Image 1: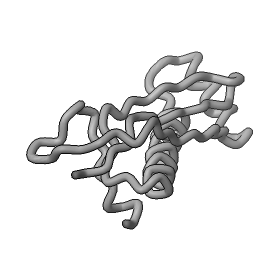
Image 2: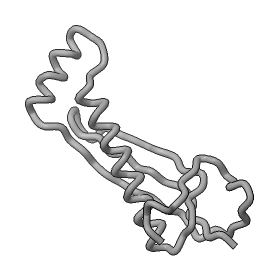
Image 3: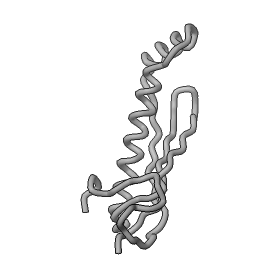
Amino acid sequence: MEKSEILVTTTEYVPGHDYEIIGEVFGLTTQSKNVVKNIGAGFKNIVGGEIKAYTELLTEARDIAIDRLRQNAVKMGADAVVMMRFDSDSISADMETVAAYGTAVKFK
């Protein structure tokens, strides 16, 4: 199965499917923006408003984490991931770690 075919859902059940639990699955990434964008974000912090460079950073990190979650689910032989959640944390002023995690399942 291709990773793009892996169903990822935040719900506990997939309607119309019985499944067996394979185990926990996750995808991790740590991202950083370049120095120029960090300086621009610092100026924006002074005047307030959305800091688009960091919104982009988190969006990119989320997408990579989900992609890696799907890759790991395929390696486990899963058909889907249920109860998917995100966790994020700042490592430093300009680095973010994002984890996507859930339960890998195989349809019966």
